[in-house]
Image 1 (cartoon, rainbow, N blue to C red):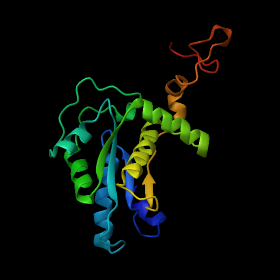
Image 2 (cartoon, rainbow, N blue to C red):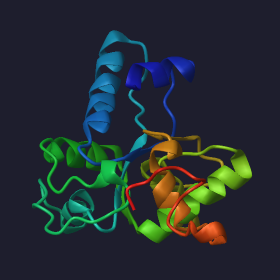
Image 3 (cartoon, helix red, strand yellow):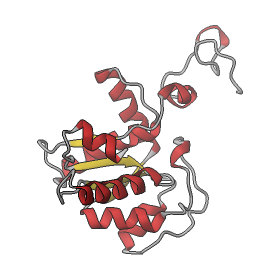
Image 4 (cartoon, rainbow, N blue to C red):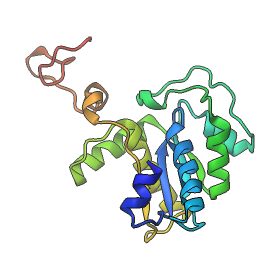
Length: 193
């Protein structure tokens, strides 16, 4: 992902990268790729702020970052509609935290309500139906822009790791169906409820 990103940006890096961080392996790989590309002379020493985005119901990286810890602790009773973010203890947590800190980035926790709202907003305004994990990154970007951590003219990259089609039932909770006695079915689909 790091190589492809740098190539597509003309062998430069953005100001910030938002990454939905369950296990965090994508962030770890990108951080390693940037160092490799610099060693090859393909990019300079600039690095994007790496921003780890987690769900508030399972945010071990965010907690460790906020506490200044080198690694996270197991998150008991992990709960979120974004299944890709429901990782109570990432194996490479120390590498994620290292990348976030070395880059001057941060770690942000987003509630399920915020990420669903962001997903619906993105679908409505941009026509992109993203998974809740990617939607969490949209909500995180809005928070960091409001706080001044990022500027409106910063070039940012937001990773989406799945399709909203995998989460129809999650998004359907905002659009209840009441006709024909089908209150628990989405669009006539056969569902487990």
